[in-house]
Length: 290
Image (tube, rainbow, N blue to C red; front, side, top):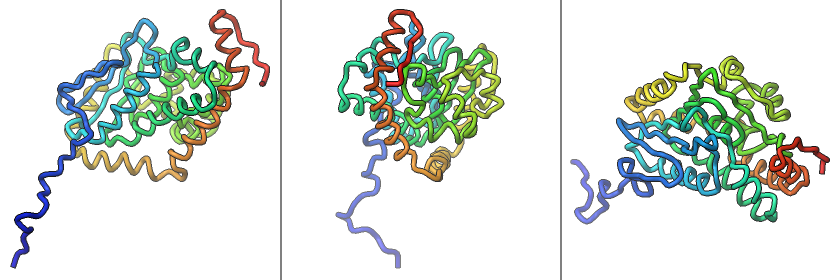
């Protein structure tokens, strides 16, 4: 005898897995470009005249978008790129760094948690994320690239985690948790302590870049790879991504929270303010260790 659900019982079909998601065909973000086709969403950072920097608003909109993607099954893979010949110059110097020097601790911590939440959302969304990197890829731009699952780059790509150059700690948005797992502890330590540029060749040799391709082939390479993933078992891909994230020895959320607090403290130092003031004056900052 086969058991049947009561006529007035719950209808499994009534649960819509898209609740909280977005409509990929009509989604129109305010702070970046969005395109969608054949299961692949393409996010393009679109301020090429400034080398595609982030603002407070674009951080928040990107965070919310990646959170919504967890409830958007029509999107099977995501490509992240920059307009023009650069990926991203990181946080906008005048629209973010300048205002931060005038903020109190509660505001600073709210900001560092916001940027950390972007990485959490990227790692938490089930879709594979493919970065198409070119030219400048620094600061928060390097972090966003790091938070992707796959990275294709051109020989012109220059990547730097340059937080120490502005008087901040190398730990930012999960860098101390994720970067050593990608390129190794010693190499990550060198980049985070010095803020120096990692060349495209180093990035490929060290495992940060999956592949180097000619600039003319970058977009097509990323799109083709994403389309191949989108055509595959997307639920299984999501499970793979979840396990890659959760099977680390230390939870990333704990690491990001610790870095958010450390970075907020650094944002109250005079060295941070000196670096901004020197940038405005087009001078070399003289750090005082305070």
